[in-house]
Length: 291
Image (cartoon, rainbow, N blue to C red):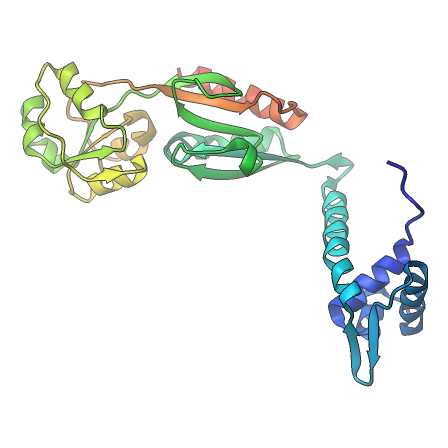
């Protein structure tokens, strides 16, 4: 694209004056004289052939033409400033946007992020969480860590690890559970995946009762409810190892059921950046240690 010569000084003077609605305050911000700001705005008006301000006795009133130009200039200057801010000590700071299932984020990833920051000090991670429903393209994500079978349309999916589900509850509840069949007498907390508890009971060799417990869209919420004595959760012990180690949560039986695994995913059309490659390499190293 061939760009005409851009009058950057004039555009900057107009943008500052439009924000302040004052040539004087714009001049203070830009460290020039008020006359210089007024002159630059006048040059811009002459170049584009429109009036950008109405000069009033007590300030300025921006015209419709000025209002149409202002947001584009503000966004452009903000983006340029943001680009310059990414340089630090002779290095370019890269931004990496990662979305991840909340359970994985809290139960596994957060405890290891300090190690990533130590080894990659010039990569800034922007981390968002979800309940496994994510649109990588719409959310502008470089990567998404999600749970499932790895079959997503137009998505490159790399397996991380399985996290089998097991019954988790308070120690006080666990003391009353002499065998897996005793769980039937408890309130069963469940996710929106209806086959999980029936699968667990099948693994225990027990006919599953009707499952009518409350439904949670997050294992974090489900396990928190279990820790408050609301019932027995079916969740991955690996993601709640801290609570189990602390004695706040108990896995009363070794019975587990697997319904998928975690995957590192990205759009197939997304070009892999150096920051993305660094994160992938680091993540797979820690996954190997976990496995």
